[in-house]
Image (cartoon, rainbow, N blue to C red; front, side, top):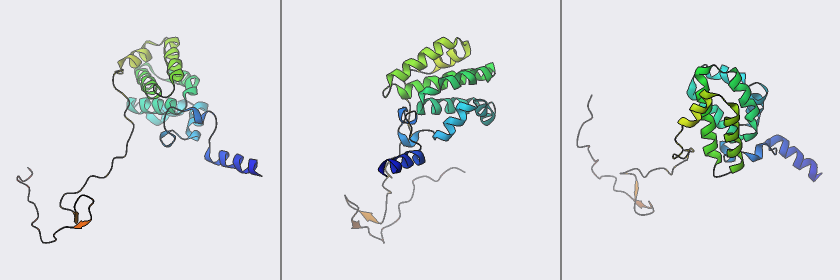
Length: 176
């Protein structure tokens, strides 16, 4: 019975060995259904992006950082993509390699070897155009900033502020 429950949980959550090998934290990964759709039909990405290079770059980065084993689908995507958009695929490959660098060096080596073996000058130019010194920026939720002149004051915001205190007025009025 316990095996059945575990199998059901893994099926519902979608945790598979391929999904568990991603370079991104679990909450930032692309859903496994979207990854399977891309693996089955890479042309779907081109229909979604509608020649928007930033969308192509972003999706290639997300897909490969979520599952580095999608390189064969990326090869099909390169074959289907016009030359003008192939540099975006190269930039997406480089960004995915940056994400995977600290987590999975083997995935980075496979991305580099894939780019080298592809022998596409546009993809290689896009890959080389990404600055290797910059680290990828992952979305981070920051703590809410303290609002000045709030209802509570003190080190731990436990003291009640003076409700009759004058409201601070800006020194300059904003230009219109």
